[in-house]
Length: 470
Image 1: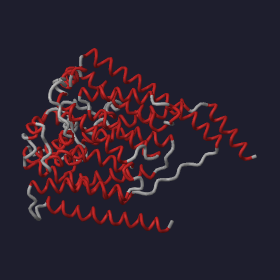
Image 2 (image 1 turned 180 degrees about the vertical axis):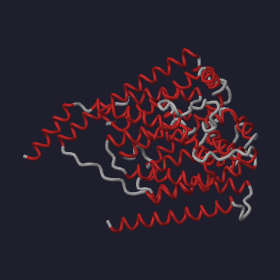
Image 3 (image 1 turned 90 degrees about the horizontal axis):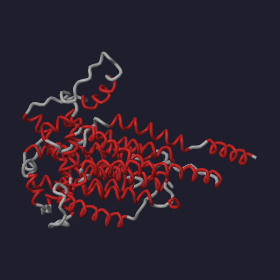
Image 4 (image 1 turned 45 degrees about the vertical axis):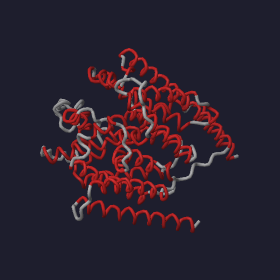
């Protein structure tokens, strides 16, 4: 036991030391202490991401199935994927090369790459510092285990039924509106009717909540039907071009399954990821036109490059500050969703029109750069600058590490999963919807768990406790 603890401490100290050295190099390069040519910067950034991933894999108690590792992996894909693919000359898709030619080779992008490095290093350092061995599951007697199994089964079916309902609503809307034909048609429907945009946003969230219930409460005796429903929805959504809408709830589902145990072997996961990237690339090539009859391409690096284009959101914020003298918001975008909700109930508090409120970064970026999404890194930067990126992602690392080390049971896992859904979405979106969705999700999850926990269970548990005492 003592040897294991010493080994864990040594791994953690080694990880902190390496991450700190990399952090010093990145900060020195950013401050122009030494020159880092663009090609070298891209190569070092790609190696930095891979090295940090390996360090987290080794040092975190749950390795690749920890929330910290999964969150950092998703952040990396969406912010460093393009840098990685370009650093090895792996981009073969002509459309991607054309699209990035407008912004990727600018000086502001070099600054954005440095900022992303700072965010990743800060997150990794915090995750290692605060990670602890997860608390053990509570031990149950056999009668209590049977009661628990009945409760889990009810929650599983409640989540599955809700999933089927929200998926049915999704299909009804895209069929009626014609959004099913292509990503361009989907964007047109969203742009022409803000109500549809709001409905879709919450449909994706509720589908994620239902998936969390299913993953947390799942037992092999319950079957796979609801997961097949999710798979069918995911395939159709992917065909349309809704990658993030599928990926983020899937990543949270992986976090929840990982809290119970490693759901699949590492090599199986690697094969699945490669297949996923190939499918993503195929979808990318035809998502606007809806035509899958041409040369689709199977280069996984093309998919990584396109997803990594979220780096543009960081580049845009750098450009705003450099060329447009955009003042830092100093936390304004984080406070705005709370203030706007308070204004609904406090008459003296002004509720600024959404098109005039410069703190709503999803609106700001739409006006300035078009529908490119946004980024948690860009939001931290435009609020507090470089030091804000370091601070915010250090907090992210602390938060994720605390979740990883928390007790794993049905209630905790469901609440954690529901709260993580909007947090993962901010990886390539703004913060504006996070508070409302977390509160709504926690209330809905608590209600469903209360309804699933029947009075008979409490009576049975009382009887079991009496038997144990006697």
